[in-house]
Image (cartoon, rainbow, N blue to C red; front, side):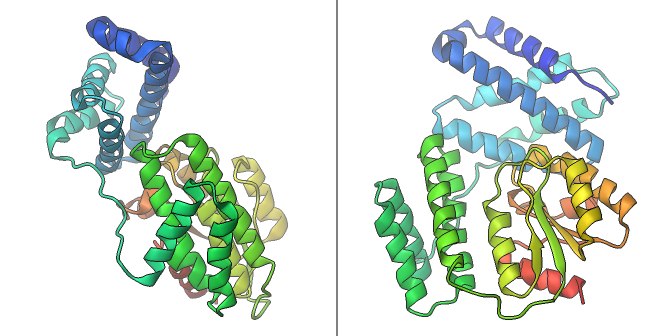
Length: 332
């Protein structure tokens, strides 16, 4: 099944603004370009959903977009108008019109995303304080806050999972709700990456020789904080971890598996539109290295656990420490 998402996205965008001239005036040139880009991604996602036969995953995608539109003060009807236009333009037989029909019929019942759970325990308070300090530009104070936890003999694994992972979930949500800019999100991510490196310099694995793991993002995925946290935790647990760059193409991942002969491959998928890339990579690795076990993780699986089976992964764990336990159960 082939689809020229650029041409189709351009045509749908032009038709949308032809029908909504006030929207064209409101959005301006930059908004128009962003609209076409979003429609192209929408089409790519629908194509992947149809090819993988996972129509139920559209609910997560629409929920994400509803949340984004709400906090950008864009009328929700504009989000609904997009699938209606696509439904008009798409041909029968691609499997995408059926999914669009479900979206149109169930649109009103799909809720916006809820913020990450925030309790009033000590870890949540520290996570909020750390994030607030970074948003205020107080990077050194934020570092010292976390280093104080380490110096008080807290395990790095606890700091990673109980504090830093909470921060990352929160950052993703407030970026989606337009409470912070892309620049702020990148600043927080880079500051946290630097903090992780500083923490990790102070420790040594408790044991070695448990096995070898290749851990990376799927092609097209740039959100690598989660897989970095997991890689560090696995190394602390005695695993030898090879961590290719997140932009590594599928063939290079395949070459890495061939060269390193790992016991397990761990793949991270944050953006839903990269799910199909994950499946293609898993199929490629399975064909060439049938004995290598493969696990997946990332935001894409949080609310749709069934995706693991669809892409033929051995399993998924929501928390990084649970992923370590999953690895231990698969590689003995």
